[in-house]
Image (tube, rainbow, N blue to C red; front, side, top):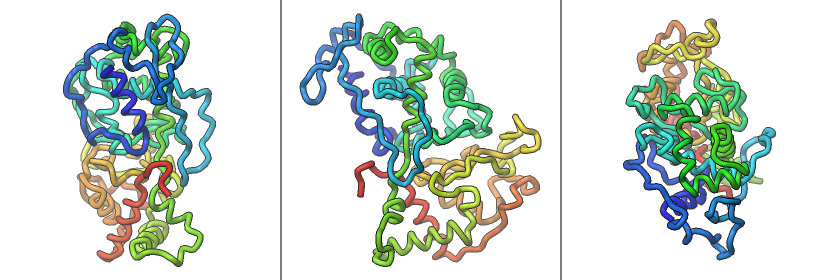
Length: 366
C-alpha cells in the first residue's frame, strides 16, 4: 500500500509541481518490499473501478495516467516512438526507486530532483565517489539527439544505462534482479511489456518517463500569447524589457535561443574550477566545451555550470556578463563570443526577472 501511494503521489505531480527537495541525493532509508497481500487495498482507481490485473502477477494496479501533452511555449515534439502510459508509469516508479542502488538509498530522483527541474548539484555516487559534474537538467530531453554534458551518448537509452551503472553502482542487469521478487514492480513490468522484469525493459521505461518530462507554459510563454501586449501590468513590462535584453544587448540568445532556450550545442567555458575536458573527450578541437543547458526552469536549480561552481542564477548571469572571468576559468580558452557586457543595475534586474519567468507552470495555467 505504501509503495502504491508513493507512486500515485509522484505521478500526480509529474513534470510541473513535483515534491522532491532540490539536491537531495538520498531517500533517507530503504523502502520495505510490498507484498501482494498488503497491496490488496490499492486495487481500484480513484473512480472506484478495478483495473485489469496483470496476468499471473496477483496484483491489480490503478490505471496509468495519460501521457502528458507538450505544454504551450514548446515546439512540436519530435517522434517519441511507441511510448505507452503504462511504460511511463513504470519509469516514474523506477526513477524514484532506491533499491536499484548498491547503497539502497541513492535514486535518480535524488540527484535529478523534480522540484529543481530534474537537475541537481554534485552529489556523490552510491559507492561514495565524488562526481566531476553536476546532475544535468533532464527536462525537454525529447528534443536532444546527443546526451550528457559532453554529448558522448547518441541516445537517451545509452545515456541512462551508463549513468545507472556509474551513479547507482551496478549495471542495470544486476540492479533490476532483486526487484523481480516485488509483486508490484513485477506487475508493472508485466502490464507494460508483457513479461517479467528485464534490464532492456527497465531502460525503456525510464527513457519513456524522461522523454515526457517537459518544461513549458511558463509565465513568459503566457506573456507572449497576449493579444495586446500594450495592455500589460508593470511587472510584465519588466519582463518584456528583460526579454529585449536577453535577445539583444546581453547576447544571451546567441547560445540560448527560444523556444527551448538552448542551441543544443557546445561552448567553451574555460574548464571553470575543474580539470574537465568536456567535449574534448570526444573531439580534441573542442576541449573545454560543454552542452548549453536549457534556461527553462533555471531559477529552480540549486547550482549552475557543469561543475556546480556557481551557487545562484544571479552569480551565473554575472559571470557571463563579465566575459567568463572568475569561478577559476581559464580565459584563454573561453568561447571568444563571450565578451564583457555592461548592464545597469536596473537592466540586470530586468534580465533576471525574465529568466525567472521561464519557470514552468501546470499545463492548465492560463
